[in-house]
Amino acid sequence: MKAKIPRIASSEITSPELYADRRRFMQLTAGASLASLLPTGLWAADKLPSTANPAYLLSEKTTPYKDVTTYNNFYEFGTSKEDPARNAHTLKTRPWTITVDGEVKKPKTFDIDALLKLAAMEERVYRLRCVEAWSMVIPWLGYPLAELIKQVEPTSKAKFVEFITLDDPAQMPGELSQVLAWPYTEGLRMDEAMHPLTLLTFGLYGEVLPNQNGAPVRVVIPWKYGFKSAKSIVKIRFTETQPVSSWMQAGPREYGFYSNVNPSVDHPRWSQAKERRIGEFFKRETLPFNGYAEQVAGLYAGMDLQANF
Image 1 (spheres, one colour):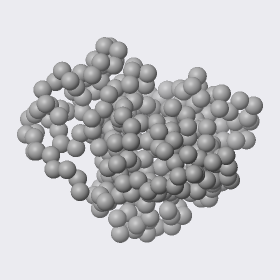
Image 2 (image 1 turned 180 degrees about the vertical axis):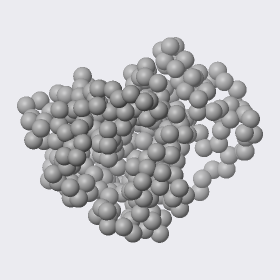
Image 3 (image 1 turned 30 degrees about the horizontal axis):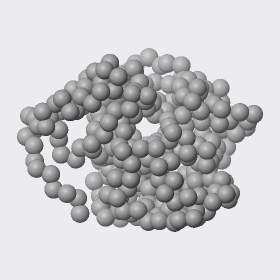
């Protein structure tokens, strides 16, 4: 059961705009925890305690909280960008467990609340880029997926990690459609999953994840297109062979396994060379690996990134 938290007057709750200002101040103070300097009344219910990690705090302006939580791709709740915010109230995030099995020495089933405590929670500001040529900058809360992986001790046969999300049309009405094969599945190579940028994510903007953003737990892989970041995960499986993701199955000519942000590889129906940041009018140049080339390009050394899109 979720712990009861005393109600706080709305006048005392920090707005997302003030929160963004606080984050920017934290960047200027080398990641010092401003939260400890604020009156406790400024924190709303359903907050996640975390420490801002200065290594992952961008100088770019964060996308407004309202846009982050009302303009979403989450086909389990509908195919329009507004559907998830309208329909995701049907999702029940407690009780919730994640089963981790496959090529591991210590398969486990984690309760979501135990998973929250597995490692220290960090705030990281990451870009999120979608194939429809739009992007956001979001302060995510979580810890490296590698922390969970270490708990189950993958065997030498574990070459890939597969993520399987909730399959329950009663809670996710979009699954009544045939737009994708359900449950939604995604996958990473082991070195991608172990990379310190890959975040097991429980919140954003200092709060627990809203349902429409992938509650109660998702992954965020900032150098890949947003659809690689599986939401509402219920199972993680380690495999010797490359998994076939839902989007690969739906459109293999359009969606490859790697799905790295590569401005020189167009989607068959639109260019990826430019993107529009939500809230901005003019488009900007799309950056290779979504701006994280320095950190991740070495993972793909020697690969043909047009053939392996």
